[in-house]
Image (cartoon, rainbow, N blue to C red):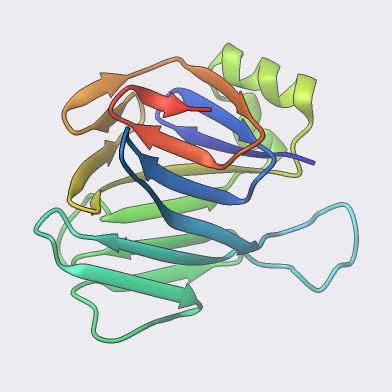
Length: 173
């Protein structure tokens, strides 16, 4: 039972439904998948729901629990059955965006990602992008690269029995 998380052109396959920031001294979970679309059965979990604890690039706290903000939020939200997008009004790029990918979406990705998904058959595949902070550490994820505290990473493949951990060294298992 695995989940796949895509950060730019990096794929992380994990037995856990959580993403963290980690360095030598700390591990900070910031994203947890609570439910996701299951196309293979009629399960009641038909939409993506997450817990998220991040900050904007200006260190404004954002706490999202399942389907609502906890406390005041400096951003707005747009949700669908398979995505959660946090954004500032009038800004093109989101603060945080997660989308559960379909088979058609996956087939259009880089071959190393497609190969890993086909070989490992994760329960769900999530693509994450944004510009945010976790514990004061800046994380930027675009279509091509993952930036952690200014260091960039691309085309990586990581398998883990722990959560997906974004580190100053890329993705840690």
